[in-house]
Image 1 (spheres, helix red, strand yellow):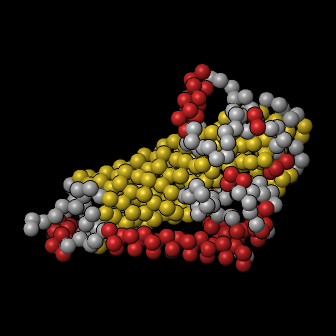
Image 2 (cartoon, helix red, strand yellow):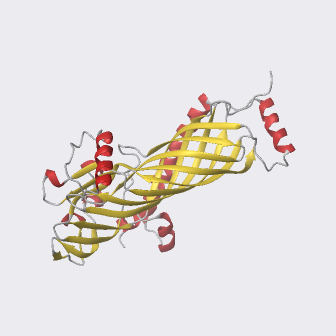
Image 3 (cartoon, helix red, strand yellow):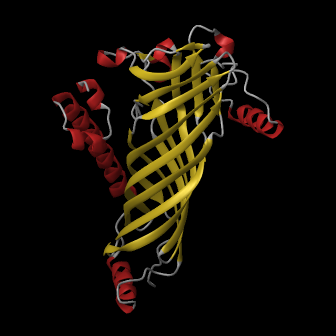
Length: 343
């Protein structure tokens, strides 16, 4: 395994196998980016979300004391929030089938997240709580870009990532056996989910306890739908064969654990996520311009129609499973969530 491979392997894989200098630099860059984002959020929090007044802290503490310190307040609470973060994707196999005699598997592909390049890694959510139990609608805009020598949407790169990844292959390409290994670009000019490896995930939440009057620990698990923007361009087949559309691609899920700091009017949260999505995409062709990825409605209508009619995708299908770790930090407005003592 090369240092370039190591730099984009899972953090857990790196810990298990040992890392080189380039990998540690990459990890430190990611950590520094998270710290910068956290500081910016903390600054915004300090300006817009003042601490609970002392009497409100006493009210919270008294309520916890009466319940033995093990239950949360039973009043209804809400949070409308947004967040940014850093993903770390596992490698995965990609299976490609096409009506031209192609039925192949590309094994163990790397996926780049590019969280700080447009479109940014970000998410929005709406959470409701009743005491210690909660529910959340969470929408995450992640990215997953295969190493084809270019970044998302053809962005120019520098360094080792300008070389397309060579991967192991099995199966057939246009009726002929594939070589044991070859560059991705021998098959696909572009392979990415970069106007979103989007996930819409309803999530069940549980408050695990208060670490301080304003600081809560929570966890949760959810299941929903993967809504990626599929960009798959077969090699040398022109514009008509390029798929570039939003699709409902399969189930998605997440596990979360986080800390929420509650202010008088809002919250600051820091959260770890593990996400998993099974993508079964259709290669429909009909590429839209790079600068116009605003066809979500028409893509959805066309996709639902194809699903209801059982239409066979003109250029085949592509499937993979994307899993990864995410570290996110966010800020939210909590309307009516703090019960104030009488003045």
